[in-house]
Length: 94
Image 1 (cartoon, rainbow, N blue to C red):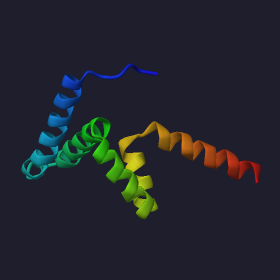
Image 2 (cartoon, one colour):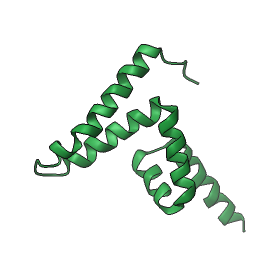
Image 3 (spheres, rainbow, N blue to C red):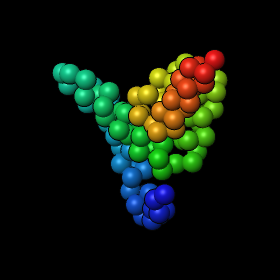
């Protein structure tokens, strides 16, 4: 278990995440998939450091489960990996 981050670090990471999300449309004009990675990095930082964003993310996952699974996989969330392994083990037993 990691120790809690300082409020200054959380604020800086949240600000960087928001800046990356805001910069995504500008970066998307560049050739290649740079905009996707910029948005994903920003979304990851915001989700790690904002309770409101996590709450909205969970609400969206419950409302649209297939899209939530794709988002979990794209963000490489450990909880999604544990859930997938648990479901595979349960399917193997049945």
